[in-house]
Image 1 (cartoon, rainbow, N blue to C red):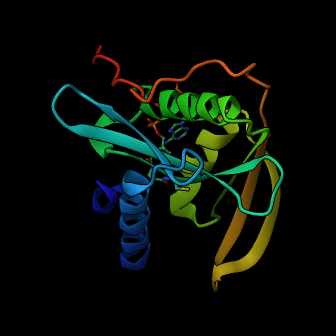
Image 2: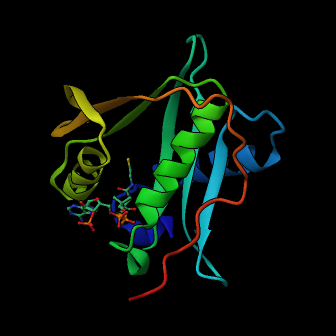
Image 3: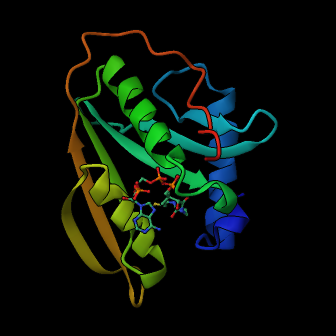
Length: 159
Ligand SMILES: CC(C)(COP(=O)(O)OP(=O)(O)OC[C@H]1O[C@@H](n2cnc3c(N)ncnc32)[C@H](O)[C@@H]1OP(=O)(O)O)[C@@H](O)C(=O)NCCC(=O)NCCS
């Protein structure tokens, strides 16, 4: 699925897999928490969030990947909404995301804007020449410690 996304480099995929393994193995709810969406048989998307070390209550949306065949059906929205609820339920008040300014990342930037993330910065050539870092941020409502299940979001039925 990470390969099929078409935007991640080999190195990024290796790091994503490392983070995935670490998240599955860890008992710490703030370290690489993972939620998936499936179609009843296969994983069609996942999100990974985690507490940012040395901050009071900021979390990072580390990874988000939706299978190309499952896009534009609300899976990304469901996963981010679920991830935000999980972060808020664990005392997180802010969610940060960094992504790329490359043209092939246009859809993901449109997605974060739609999801209400605020564009807070752009660092030229951050990842590499002609590959800016683009930074988004969102303040979360306190959840009052609502319980959040680890079930994750389910893939919406094809219309
Ligand atoms: C970006 C991504 C996560 C979106 O997931 P998705 O499940 O297709 O998104 P949703 O169906 O929940 O879309 C929610 C809204 O976001 C916006 N949006 C999503 N994809 C978009 C696109 N390709 N172009 C423009 N807007 C888009 C739309 O407003 C959409 O609402 P609508 O379909 O009612 O118009 C997915 O395309 C993806 O995994 N991309 C590759 C991996 C990636 O870039 N990950 C992030 C790295 S930082």
